[in-house]
Length: 313
Length: 295
Image (cartoon, rainbow over all chains, first blue to last red; front, side, top):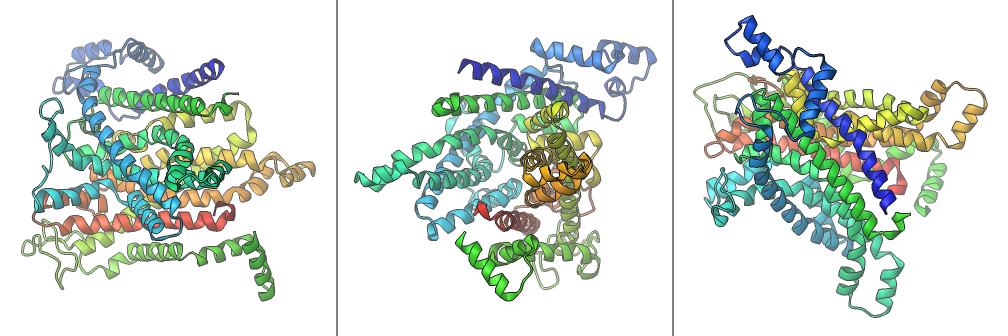
């Protein structure tokens, strides 16, 4: 297990270095001189030279990259040109909002996707199965920004049940917090529920045909126990990995969902920074997202090996 | 297996040629969902191509006497905030969305397939380097990378296509590499090598044609993803620029008028849904038709 862990951790180092190079390289695609943007109206050559020196823009690109990485490794992701705040503190402020949204979306996806997948597999080729498959296709094909707008029209404009936009922190008022996030969480969790349903169905069908399920049935165990205890427990292993892999999709979805519902989270921070050409924030946020994704993949691999001892060799 | 054997006998009885592509096409024809999806895709392509001739109004023509009119005989899908006909804009919007889907997947496959073939066939340091780059690109969520790239390139439809194409490339590299690794140990590749074919010829004439089916399936599913991505970028203002119509930018505008004119949001969204659903169903159908072991 230790050898596996060491090998797997060593594998992610070059990936992380390449991710950082890729993110840093994106800035070089930028048309124009960042010093001119920072100087604003003031185009005094002395001021420009000072800015270039201060931000090390007068150094060769590889040297700039080394300085940036040195800062990153010391926990300094740079400073927002627009908000005059450190990227680290901006992330610390926005991340909990997105984590709450993503957590609720995950809950929605688990509550819909796994039961639908189980029912679809157990009642294979019945109306239940067809219904669940139609739901999965609907979930995979519906753009979440369209679903968001339709839900706002139904629940906010027509029925006046939920607020159309805004966000209240969980610690301030939990009822209002839930009211502002329930619709975005459903919008965000909808596609993930469809993916979960498909994978649970496929894994359950495989498990239901296995010898241990036949043995459990032969022992005369009730069907619910066979399905929920024997088949489901084994079918859940690939679903754990899937959840980690789908984290990226959840963050991508959060970018649009937060935009539609005006939620001041991580996704909105990315979009606002992109539009305001606040590149330090974009770089920092993308780097954190990619690193989290890589770390979650590592955790999923470890969890997979832990629950399946045959993989340890 | 039995179905295949029966099928083969039926074919022989009818004197059909035993061509794998013809067999796949016949299998695809048996899948009703995939055939309906194919019909919708063909219809959408026809609408996009023929839009200048079949659209009832000019897509950018404003009329202050018909601002936010509900669907009627004159305007089947209603009108928008400056009196433009929503149906005409949805028809012209198909050009941007389908064009973005096809062009960006063309870019992704055009770059990804040769690189994947190179990585899988050559192996060694080329494979290690390309695989690490692919891992790095896949670590950044699809839409976040597409947004960042298109923002850096500048907001326009063509830049959005490039951004989506570049973002989708790693998936094609990884798939092609995997398929090449599996194909290059097959007997027919060994035989081609034994008779003295050069490496480039083995890769292009023997390996590539045999890995086309999974790439076709991926292309169909990737078009669905690219249509959603283009709509998302246009929704955020990074794709098609106003007043030119695109389904995503129409939804962006419609969001502000959802209480007064919900039809402005319904139709472009439904068009995205129909296109994406069709390409997803077609991809599933192609997978079943081209790889019978999958079903």
